[in-house]
Length: 441
Ligand code: SF4
Image 1 (cartoon, rainbow, N blue to C red):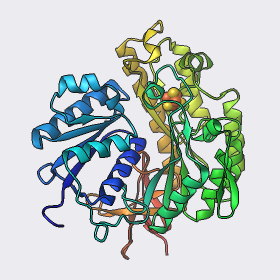
Image 2: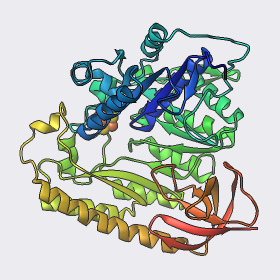
Image 3: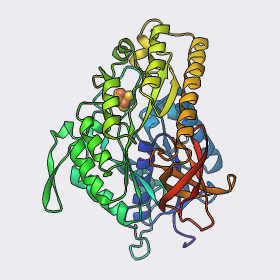
Protein backbone atom coordinates (compact mmCIF):
# COMPACT_ATOMS: atom_id res chain seq x y z
CA UNK A 1 0.00 0.00 0.00
CA UNK A 2 1.23 3.49 -0.90
CA UNK A 3 2.61 5.09 2.30
CA UNK A 4 0.73 8.33 1.53
CA UNK A 5 -2.62 6.55 1.45
CA UNK A 6 -4.75 7.94 4.28
CA UNK A 7 -5.22 5.13 6.78
CA UNK A 8 -8.02 4.57 9.27
CA UNK A 9 -8.35 2.32 12.30
CA UNK A 10 -11.77 0.88 13.25
CA UNK A 11 -12.81 -0.16 16.73
CA UNK A 12 -16.15 -1.99 16.60
CA UNK A 13 -18.04 -2.60 19.85
CA UNK A 14 -21.49 -4.01 20.57
CA UNK A 15 -23.90 -6.38 18.91
CA UNK A 16 -23.94 -7.92 15.40
CA UNK A 17 -26.10 -5.02 14.20
CA UNK A 18 -23.34 -2.60 15.16
CA UNK A 19 -20.87 -4.90 13.42
CA UNK A 20 -22.88 -4.58 10.22
CA UNK A 21 -22.72 -0.78 10.59
CA UNK A 22 -18.93 -1.05 10.94
CA UNK A 23 -18.78 -3.21 7.83
CA UNK A 24 -20.73 -0.62 5.86
CA UNK A 25 -18.36 2.10 7.05
CA UNK A 26 -15.34 -0.03 6.14
CA UNK A 27 -16.81 -0.77 2.71
CA UNK A 28 -17.36 2.95 2.09
CA UNK A 29 -13.87 3.82 3.29
CA UNK A 30 -12.20 1.22 1.07
CA UNK A 31 -14.41 2.25 -1.83
CA UNK A 32 -13.07 5.78 -1.49
CA UNK A 33 -9.45 4.64 -1.38
CA UNK A 34 -8.74 4.79 2.34
CA UNK A 35 -6.50 2.10 3.78
CA UNK A 36 -7.31 0.28 7.03
CA UNK A 37 -4.98 -0.33 9.92
CA UNK A 38 -5.24 -3.00 12.58
CA UNK A 39 -3.42 -0.87 15.15
CA UNK A 40 -3.55 2.68 16.43
CA UNK A 41 0.04 3.49 15.46
CA UNK A 42 -0.50 2.74 11.78
CA UNK A 43 -3.69 4.83 11.52
CA UNK A 44 -4.07 8.54 10.71
CA UNK A 45 -7.34 8.56 12.62
CA UNK A 46 -9.59 6.09 14.40
CA UNK A 47 -13.36 5.52 14.10
CA UNK A 48 -14.88 4.07 17.27
CA UNK A 49 -18.30 2.44 16.71
CA UNK A 50 -19.82 2.39 20.19
CA UNK A 51 -22.52 0.46 22.04
CA UNK A 52 -24.90 2.15 24.48
CA UNK A 53 -27.29 -0.68 25.30
CA UNK A 54 -26.37 -1.25 28.94
CA UNK A 55 -24.58 0.98 31.40
CA UNK A 56 -21.67 -1.46 31.39
CA UNK A 57 -21.50 -1.15 27.57
CA UNK A 58 -21.44 2.65 27.88
CA UNK A 59 -18.50 2.46 30.26
CA UNK A 60 -16.70 0.11 27.88
CA UNK A 61 -17.38 2.46 24.94
CA UNK A 62 -16.12 5.51 26.83
CA UNK A 63 -12.97 3.57 27.78
CA UNK A 64 -12.41 2.55 24.16
CA UNK A 65 -12.72 6.20 23.06
CA UNK A 66 -10.23 7.20 25.77
CA UNK A 67 -7.78 4.51 24.68
CA UNK A 68 -8.03 5.54 21.01
CA UNK A 69 -7.44 9.20 21.99
CA UNK A 70 -4.43 8.30 24.12
CA UNK A 71 -2.90 6.02 21.49
CA UNK A 72 -3.76 7.92 18.32
CA UNK A 73 -5.23 11.33 19.17
CA UNK A 74 -7.65 11.69 16.22
CA UNK A 75 -10.95 9.99 16.99
CA UNK A 76 -14.40 9.99 15.36
CA UNK A 77 -17.18 8.44 17.43
CA UNK A 78 -20.29 6.81 15.99
CA UNK A 79 -22.88 4.14 16.98
CA UNK A 80 -25.47 3.80 19.71
CA UNK A 81 -23.65 5.81 22.38
CA UNK A 82 -23.39 8.64 19.82
CA UNK A 83 -26.96 9.49 20.84
CA UNK A 84 -25.45 10.78 24.06
CA UNK A 85 -23.13 13.32 22.52
CA UNK A 86 -23.05 15.50 25.66
CA UNK A 87 -21.80 12.60 27.77
CA UNK A 88 -19.10 11.76 25.22
CA UNK A 89 -17.92 15.36 24.87
CA UNK A 90 -17.95 15.89 28.61
CA UNK A 91 -15.77 12.79 29.13
CA UNK A 92 -13.61 13.24 26.04
CA UNK A 93 -13.67 16.88 24.84
CA UNK A 94 -11.08 16.17 22.12
CA UNK A 95 -13.10 13.81 19.93
CA UNK A 96 -13.35 15.14 16.37
CA UNK A 97 -16.99 14.25 15.65
CA UNK A 98 -19.91 12.31 17.11
CA UNK A 99 -22.77 10.61 15.24
CA UNK A 100 -25.44 8.05 16.12
CA UNK A 101 -26.14 4.49 14.89
CA UNK A 102 -26.19 3.79 11.13
CA UNK A 103 -25.26 7.38 10.28
CA UNK A 104 -22.74 6.31 7.67
CA UNK A 105 -22.97 9.64 5.82
CA UNK A 106 -22.10 11.59 8.96
CA UNK A 107 -19.10 9.33 9.58
CA UNK A 108 -17.89 9.78 6.00
CA UNK A 109 -18.33 13.56 6.20
CA UNK A 110 -16.27 13.66 9.39
CA UNK A 111 -13.59 11.47 7.79
CA UNK A 112 -13.46 13.73 4.70
CA UNK A 113 -13.18 16.81 6.93
CA UNK A 114 -10.31 15.48 9.04
CA UNK A 115 -8.54 13.20 6.60
CA UNK A 116 -9.12 14.08 2.94
CA UNK A 117 -9.45 11.07 0.70
CA UNK A 118 -7.13 9.87 -2.03
CA UNK A 119 -9.35 7.82 -4.27
CA UNK A 120 -7.92 5.82 -7.10
CA UNK A 121 -10.67 3.79 -8.70
CA UNK A 122 -8.18 1.70 -10.65
CA UNK A 123 -6.52 0.45 -7.48
CA UNK A 124 -9.16 0.61 -4.79
CA UNK A 125 -11.88 -1.67 -6.01
CA UNK A 126 -14.43 -2.81 -3.47
CA UNK A 127 -14.84 -6.56 -3.78
CA UNK A 128 -18.22 -8.07 -4.46
CA UNK A 129 -20.02 -8.45 -1.13
CA UNK A 130 -18.25 -5.42 0.35
CA UNK A 131 -15.72 -5.62 3.16
CA UNK A 132 -16.69 -7.63 6.17
CA UNK A 133 -15.38 -7.96 9.67
CA UNK A 134 -16.57 -11.54 10.00
CA UNK A 135 -14.55 -14.43 8.51
CA UNK A 136 -15.02 -14.84 4.79
CA UNK A 137 -17.38 -17.81 5.03
CA UNK A 138 -20.16 -16.27 7.09
CA UNK A 139 -21.81 -12.86 7.06
CA UNK A 140 -24.51 -10.97 8.89
CA UNK A 141 -27.43 -9.85 6.75
CA UNK A 142 -29.34 -6.97 8.30
CA UNK A 143 -32.93 -6.86 7.02
CA UNK A 144 -34.27 -3.88 8.97
CA UNK A 145 -33.33 -1.14 11.40
CA UNK A 146 -35.16 -0.07 14.54
CA UNK A 147 -38.08 -1.61 16.39
CA UNK A 148 -41.79 -0.89 16.88
CA UNK A 149 -41.92 -2.61 20.29
CA UNK A 150 -41.43 -0.87 23.59
CA UNK A 151 -40.13 -3.52 25.96
CA UNK A 152 -39.88 -1.79 29.30
CA UNK A 153 -36.24 -2.79 30.00
CA UNK A 154 -34.96 -1.71 26.59
CA UNK A 155 -33.76 1.63 25.24
CA UNK A 156 -33.02 0.43 21.71
CA UNK A 157 -36.14 2.01 20.12
CA UNK A 158 -35.17 5.35 21.64
CA UNK A 159 -31.69 4.94 20.15
CA UNK A 160 -32.48 3.31 16.83
CA UNK A 161 -36.04 4.52 16.20
CA UNK A 162 -39.05 2.65 14.81
CA UNK A 163 -38.88 -0.31 12.42
CA UNK A 164 -37.59 0.50 8.94
CA UNK A 165 -37.50 -2.59 6.70
CA UNK A 166 -35.22 -2.83 3.70
CA UNK A 167 -36.90 -3.68 0.39
CA UNK A 168 -36.86 -7.44 -0.24
CA UNK A 169 -34.90 -7.06 -3.47
CA UNK A 170 -32.18 -5.02 -1.71
CA UNK A 171 -31.77 -7.74 0.92
CA UNK A 172 -31.71 -10.47 -1.74
CA UNK A 173 -29.23 -8.56 -3.88
CA UNK A 174 -26.89 -8.22 -0.92
CA UNK A 175 -27.34 -11.92 -0.07
CA UNK A 176 -26.56 -12.90 -3.65
CA UNK A 177 -23.40 -10.76 -3.69
CA UNK A 178 -22.27 -12.29 -0.40
CA UNK A 179 -22.82 -15.83 -1.68
CA UNK A 180 -20.94 -15.02 -4.90
CA UNK A 181 -18.09 -13.68 -2.77
CA UNK A 182 -17.78 -17.06 -1.02
CA UNK A 183 -20.11 -16.77 1.97
CA UNK A 184 -21.45 -20.16 3.07
CA UNK A 185 -23.64 -19.01 5.96
CA UNK A 186 -25.97 -16.02 6.14
CA UNK A 187 -26.96 -14.81 9.60
CA UNK A 188 -30.20 -12.87 9.32
CA UNK A 189 -30.37 -10.10 11.91
CA UNK A 190 -32.50 -7.12 12.91
CA UNK A 191 -34.11 -6.06 16.19
CA UNK A 192 -37.30 -7.99 15.47
CA UNK A 193 -36.76 -10.29 12.48
CA UNK A 194 -40.27 -11.75 12.27
CA UNK A 195 -41.77 -8.22 12.12
CA UNK A 196 -39.96 -7.70 8.82
CA UNK A 197 -42.04 -5.68 6.35
CA UNK A 198 -44.86 -4.63 8.70
CA UNK A 199 -43.83 -0.96 8.38
CA UNK A 200 -43.97 -1.07 4.56
CA UNK A 201 -47.17 -3.16 4.50
CA UNK A 202 -45.21 -6.06 3.00
CA UNK A 203 -44.44 -4.02 -0.14
CA UNK A 204 -43.47 -6.00 -3.22
CA UNK A 205 -40.25 -5.36 -5.10
CA UNK A 206 -38.92 -6.90 -8.27
CA UNK A 207 -36.35 -9.66 -7.97
CA UNK A 208 -35.29 -11.82 -10.93
CA UNK A 209 -38.31 -10.84 -13.02
CA UNK A 210 -40.81 -11.57 -10.27
CA UNK A 211 -42.37 -9.73 -7.37
CA UNK A 212 -41.25 -10.62 -3.85
CA UNK A 213 -43.06 -9.33 -0.77
CA UNK A 214 -41.15 -7.80 2.13
CA UNK A 215 -42.55 -10.49 4.41
CA UNK A 216 -40.78 -12.77 6.86
CA UNK A 217 -41.86 -16.06 5.27
CA UNK A 218 -41.35 -14.85 1.68
CA UNK A 219 -37.87 -13.58 2.46
CA UNK A 220 -36.90 -16.82 4.23
CA UNK A 221 -38.15 -18.82 1.25
CA UNK A 222 -36.09 -16.74 -1.19
CA UNK A 223 -32.98 -16.86 0.99
CA UNK A 224 -33.40 -20.64 1.13
CA UNK A 225 -32.85 -20.75 -2.63
CA UNK A 226 -29.22 -19.60 -2.43
CA UNK A 227 -28.04 -23.05 -1.32
CA UNK A 228 -26.11 -21.81 1.74
CA UNK A 229 -26.82 -22.04 5.44
CA UNK A 230 -29.40 -19.42 6.49
CA UNK A 231 -29.70 -18.80 10.22
CA UNK A 232 -32.45 -16.69 11.79
CA UNK A 233 -31.75 -14.46 14.78
CA UNK A 234 -34.05 -12.36 16.99
CA UNK A 235 -37.30 -14.00 15.93
CA UNK A 236 -40.32 -13.14 18.09
CA UNK A 237 -42.92 -15.91 18.25
CA UNK A 238 -45.65 -14.21 16.21
CA UNK A 239 -48.12 -16.77 14.80
CA UNK A 240 -46.64 -16.62 11.28
CA UNK A 241 -43.34 -17.97 12.62
CA UNK A 242 -45.02 -21.41 12.52
CA UNK A 243 -44.89 -21.23 8.70
CA UNK A 244 -41.09 -21.07 8.48
CA UNK A 245 -40.76 -24.32 10.45
CA UNK A 246 -41.82 -26.09 7.24
CA UNK A 247 -38.90 -24.44 5.38
CA UNK A 248 -36.60 -25.72 8.12
CA UNK A 249 -38.02 -29.24 7.88
CA UNK A 250 -37.45 -29.15 4.11
CA UNK A 251 -33.82 -28.18 4.66
CA UNK A 252 -34.21 -24.79 2.96
CA UNK A 253 -33.08 -22.82 6.00
CA UNK A 254 -31.29 -24.01 9.12
CA UNK A 255 -33.46 -25.65 11.80
CA UNK A 256 -32.43 -22.97 14.25
CA UNK A 257 -34.52 -20.27 15.92
CA UNK A 258 -33.05 -17.57 18.10
CA UNK A 259 -36.10 -16.40 20.05
CA UNK A 260 -35.46 -14.00 22.91
CA UNK A 261 -38.27 -15.11 25.23
CA UNK A 262 -36.82 -13.14 28.19
CA UNK A 263 -39.23 -14.77 30.64
CA UNK A 264 -42.02 -17.33 30.93
CA UNK A 265 -44.24 -15.89 33.66
CA UNK A 266 -47.26 -14.16 32.02
CA UNK A 267 -47.26 -11.52 34.77
CA UNK A 268 -43.62 -10.66 34.18
CA UNK A 269 -43.95 -10.72 30.39
CA UNK A 270 -46.76 -8.21 30.74
CA UNK A 271 -44.64 -5.96 32.95
CA UNK A 272 -41.84 -6.28 30.41
CA UNK A 273 -44.30 -5.29 27.65
CA UNK A 274 -43.01 -8.09 25.48
CA UNK A 275 -44.30 -8.44 21.91
CA UNK A 276 -46.15 -11.53 20.60
CA UNK A 277 -48.67 -13.49 22.52
CA UNK A 278 -46.74 -16.19 24.34
CA UNK A 279 -49.82 -18.13 25.39
CA UNK A 280 -49.57 -21.85 24.83
CA UNK A 281 -45.88 -21.45 24.01
CA UNK A 282 -45.04 -24.94 25.25
CA UNK A 283 -47.66 -26.43 22.93
CA UNK A 284 -46.35 -24.45 19.99
CA UNK A 285 -42.76 -25.47 20.66
CA UNK A 286 -43.87 -29.11 20.88
CA UNK A 287 -45.63 -28.83 17.52
CA UNK A 288 -42.52 -27.16 15.98
CA UNK A 289 -40.42 -30.05 17.21
CA UNK A 290 -42.88 -32.58 15.80
CA UNK A 291 -42.67 -30.89 12.40
CA UNK A 292 -38.91 -30.41 12.55
CA UNK A 293 -37.27 -32.80 15.05
CA UNK A 294 -33.77 -31.31 14.59
CA UNK A 295 -34.91 -27.82 15.57
CA UNK A 296 -32.53 -25.97 17.89
CA UNK A 297 -34.00 -23.19 20.00
CA UNK A 298 -31.70 -20.54 21.39
CA UNK A 299 -33.13 -17.98 23.76
CA UNK A 300 -32.12 -15.36 26.26
CA UNK A 301 -33.79 -14.66 29.59
CA UNK A 302 -33.64 -11.94 32.22
CA UNK A 303 -33.58 -12.85 35.91
CA UNK A 304 -34.37 -10.39 38.67
CA UNK A 305 -36.75 -8.15 36.70
CA UNK A 306 -38.63 -5.80 39.08
CA UNK A 307 -41.49 -7.65 40.75
CA UNK A 308 -40.16 -11.14 39.92
CA UNK A 309 -41.45 -13.34 42.75
CA UNK A 310 -40.09 -16.78 43.58
CA UNK A 311 -43.13 -18.26 41.80
CA UNK A 312 -42.37 -16.35 38.62
CA UNK A 313 -38.78 -17.47 38.72
CA UNK A 314 -39.80 -21.11 39.17
CA UNK A 315 -42.17 -20.77 36.21
CA UNK A 316 -39.15 -19.67 34.20
CA UNK A 317 -37.02 -22.64 35.30
CA UNK A 318 -39.88 -25.05 34.54
CA UNK A 319 -40.28 -23.47 31.12
CA UNK A 320 -36.67 -23.90 30.02
CA UNK A 321 -36.77 -27.52 31.20
CA UNK A 322 -40.13 -28.40 29.65
CA UNK A 323 -39.44 -26.57 26.40
CA UNK A 324 -35.95 -28.12 26.35
CA UNK A 325 -34.43 -24.79 25.34
CA UNK A 326 -31.22 -25.94 23.69
CA UNK A 327 -29.20 -22.77 24.21
CA UNK A 328 -30.38 -20.63 27.10
CA UNK A 329 -28.53 -17.40 27.81
CA UNK A 330 -29.20 -15.58 31.05
CA UNK A 331 -28.83 -11.90 31.89
CA UNK A 332 -29.10 -10.33 35.31
CA UNK A 333 -31.57 -7.44 35.22
CA UNK A 334 -29.77 -4.11 34.89
CA UNK A 335 -31.40 -0.81 35.71
CA UNK A 336 -30.52 0.86 32.43
CA UNK A 337 -30.68 4.66 32.40
CA UNK A 338 -33.71 5.76 30.37
CA UNK A 339 -35.50 2.39 30.50
CA UNK A 340 -39.14 2.56 31.70
CA UNK A 341 -38.60 -0.50 33.96
CA UNK A 342 -36.55 1.73 36.30
CA UNK A 343 -39.82 3.25 37.44
CA UNK A 344 -41.45 -0.09 38.33
CA UNK A 345 -42.04 -1.08 41.94
CA UNK A 346 -40.42 -3.98 43.81
CA UNK A 347 -36.88 -3.95 42.52
CA UNK A 348 -35.04 -7.14 43.48
CA UNK A 349 -31.94 -7.09 45.71
CA UNK A 350 -28.69 -7.74 43.88
CA UNK A 351 -27.96 -10.76 46.14
CA UNK A 352 -31.26 -12.30 45.14
CA UNK A 353 -30.59 -11.59 41.44
CA UNK A 354 -27.16 -13.24 41.75
CA UNK A 355 -28.66 -16.27 43.47
CA UNK A 356 -31.36 -16.70 40.79
CA UNK A 357 -28.73 -16.36 38.09
CA UNK A 358 -26.76 -19.23 39.67
CA UNK A 359 -29.86 -21.39 39.91
CA UNK A 360 -30.71 -20.66 36.28
CA UNK A 361 -27.19 -21.59 35.20
CA UNK A 362 -27.38 -24.89 37.11
CA UNK A 363 -30.51 -25.92 35.20
CA UNK A 364 -29.03 -24.65 31.94
CA UNK A 365 -25.82 -26.63 32.51
CA UNK A 366 -27.79 -29.82 33.15
CA UNK A 367 -29.77 -29.31 29.94
CA UNK A 368 -26.58 -28.65 27.98
CA UNK A 369 -24.96 -31.77 29.45
CA UNK A 370 -27.92 -33.97 28.52
CA UNK A 371 -28.01 -32.50 25.04
CA UNK A 372 -24.26 -33.06 24.56
CA UNK A 373 -24.45 -36.69 25.71
CA UNK A 374 -27.33 -37.34 23.30
CA UNK A 375 -25.09 -36.18 20.43
CA UNK A 376 -22.38 -38.81 21.05
CA UNK A 377 -22.24 -41.32 18.22
CA UNK A 378 -24.23 -39.14 15.84
CA UNK A 379 -22.93 -38.06 12.46
CA UNK A 380 -23.71 -34.42 11.82
CA UNK A 381 -22.94 -31.74 9.28
CA UNK A 382 -20.50 -29.06 10.47
CA UNK A 383 -18.91 -25.94 8.98
CA UNK A 384 -15.20 -25.30 9.54
CA UNK A 385 -14.22 -21.98 11.16
CA UNK A 386 -10.48 -22.75 11.05
CA UNK A 387 -7.67 -24.44 12.96
CA UNK A 388 -7.65 -23.96 16.74
CA UNK A 389 -4.11 -23.98 18.13
CA UNK A 390 -5.14 -24.62 21.75
CA UNK A 391 -7.49 -27.50 20.98
CA UNK A 392 -5.17 -28.83 18.23
CA UNK A 393 -8.24 -29.52 16.15
CA UNK A 394 -10.45 -27.78 13.63
CA UNK A 395 -12.97 -25.47 15.31
CA UNK A 396 -16.27 -26.14 13.58
CA UNK A 397 -19.93 -25.48 14.22
CA UNK A 398 -22.99 -27.65 13.72
CA UNK A 399 -26.31 -26.34 12.43
CA UNK A 400 -27.20 -25.84 16.10
CA UNK A 401 -24.32 -23.40 16.71
CA UNK A 402 -24.35 -19.76 15.68
CA UNK A 403 -20.90 -18.15 15.55
CA UNK A 404 -19.66 -16.40 18.69
CA UNK A 405 -22.66 -17.24 20.89
CA UNK A 406 -23.18 -21.01 20.76
CA UNK A 407 -21.01 -24.12 21.00
CA UNK A 408 -18.02 -25.41 19.08
CA UNK A 409 -17.40 -28.82 17.56
CA UNK A 410 -13.69 -29.66 17.67
CA UNK A 411 -12.90 -31.99 14.82
CA UNK A 412 -9.77 -34.07 14.29
CA UNK A 413 -8.86 -34.79 10.72
CA UNK A 414 -5.81 -36.12 8.93
CA UNK A 415 -6.75 -34.15 5.86
CA UNK A 416 -6.58 -30.36 5.89
CA UNK A 417 -9.97 -28.64 6.11
CA UNK A 418 -10.37 -25.14 4.68
CA UNK A 419 -12.49 -22.49 6.38
CA UNK A 420 -16.08 -22.57 5.23
CA UNK A 421 -16.03 -26.22 4.15
CA UNK A 422 -19.17 -28.07 5.23
CA UNK A 423 -18.65 -31.77 5.94
CA UNK A 424 -19.84 -34.69 8.10
CA UNK A 425 -18.30 -35.35 11.51
CA UNK A 426 -18.90 -38.19 13.94
CA UNK A 427 -19.28 -36.99 17.53
CA UNK A 428 -17.11 -38.89 20.01
CA UNK A 429 -17.44 -36.89 23.23
CA UNK A 430 -19.23 -33.92 24.75
CA UNK A 431 -18.71 -31.42 27.51
CA UNK A 432 -21.34 -28.73 27.97
CA UNK A 433 -21.90 -27.02 24.61
CA UNK A 434 -18.55 -28.25 23.30
CA UNK A 435 -18.47 -31.40 21.21
CA UNK A 436 -15.49 -33.34 19.92
CA UNK A 437 -15.50 -35.51 16.85
CA UNK A 438 -13.69 -36.92 13.86
CA UNK A 439 -14.18 -36.19 10.23
CA UNK A 440 -16.37 -38.93 8.82
CA UNK A 441 -15.10 -40.36 5.55
S1 SF4 B 1 -38.20 -6.10 20.73
FE1 SF4 B 1 -38.07 -5.19 22.76
S2 SF4 B 1 -36.02 -5.77 23.47
FE2 SF4 B 1 -36.00 -6.06 21.27
S3 SF4 B 1 -35.23 -4.13 20.45
FE3 SF4 B 1 -37.47 -4.00 20.44
S4 SF4 B 1 -37.97 -2.98 22.35
FE4 SF4 B 1 -35.86 -3.73 22.57
